[in-house]
Amino acid sequence: MNQDAVVHYFTGTGNTRHAARIAAERLRAAGWTVSERPMDRCPPEAGTAELHWFLYPMYGFGAPALVTRYLSALSAPPGARAAVLAVGGSMRGEPGDEGVSLHRLSSLLRKRGFTVFYTNLVSYPINWTQFFNPPTPAESARICEQTDERVRRIADAVLRGETHLRKRSRRARAGLGLIYLAYRSLGRRLLGKLFTADDRCDGCSACARRCPASAIAMRHGRPAWDWRCEGCMRCINACPREAIQSSSARMLVFAAAGLLPFWPALAAGRAVSAPVLSLLAGTGVFLAATGLFLLAADRLLAFAGTRPAGRRLLAPGPSRRFRRYRGPGDGVGPSE
Ligand SMILES: Cc1cc2nc3c(=O)[nH]c(=O)nc-3n(C[C@H](O)[C@H](O)[C@H](O)COP(=O)(O)O)c2cc1C
Ligand code: SF4
Ligand code: SF4
Image 1 (tube, protein in one colour):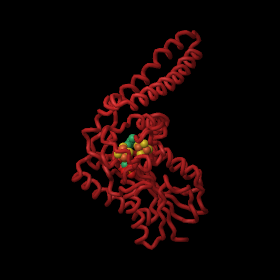
Image 2: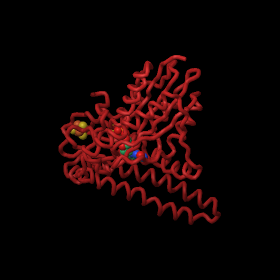
Image 3: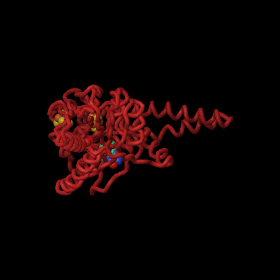
Image 4: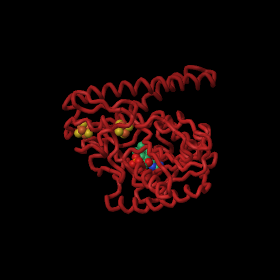
């Protein structure tokens, strides 16, 4: 048996990178040769290593879309074993909920030829500064210290080859799976559309260079967010001028655009008498109208963002009052 291992990880704000480093150090200390592969910057490659460890932050009870895309393109070398660690977030360090991610990623890895023998979950401070004020620096340090110790214990279990597979009931998988589906298909994209840069932005473009989803483009010296956001919160937390905000005006406009389609959908449903056809007509009109209204709202807000008065209107939002969060493994992205 060779003693080669690969630690594959994705991080938005540094927590998962920190956990990945602890895992890699622990393996090296036990005599393993370890390479670290950030999943947003390396092509999917498993090489010939015998042990593979996958670490990712949890979003909406699931794994980031770019992580599942990376895993879908991996092929396991003969005899490869895999461990999976989900990294959640909390205000006080209490363990979170792995949702459906460990179950789904394990199935995906098995399909790619890996023998999954270990899955677990840890919680670092929450990084969702669009809507939550993260823990104070002192509280964050305490949570990190507590979780670091847990990651070390997990690394030792992985080294011993211990079998540990977390299970979820069918009902939990169905319910949380729906939330994850909504997050992955639309939620994360809308999160990107809530961002705006306020008047402190100096056009340095660090946010655009660091975005792991290439979802930010600089237009006329200011960042503009497209629909590819993963929701990783790297941009809002890493902006050197704390100029990125979640905009209340954007939230209102998108909420209205999401609610309006109910009326044409109801009208379409009522216009057809056969129940199945009525449901199909209502759903079809709802989906089409939602897409149209969201695109129209996006165009309207993009236009408002080109005017100084529009920018002043878009800037206020909850994040102005919140601290920013940088995890212990911060320094991510091409400009590090
Ligand atoms: C959009 C979004 C959704 C999240 N959903 C979850 C979740 O479902 N469960 C959880 O425990 N943490 C959740 N979190 C918290 C992060 O997973 C957590 O803070 C993580 O440690 C961030 O890791 P990173 O610093 O490597 O990006 C969410 C964070 C964001 C921004
Ligand atoms: S990182 Fe901040 S200051 Fe720099 S372009 Fe982005 S929003 Fe503006
Ligand atoms: S736009 Fe911001 S939150 Fe979205 S993927 Fe890029 S860096 Fe992450």
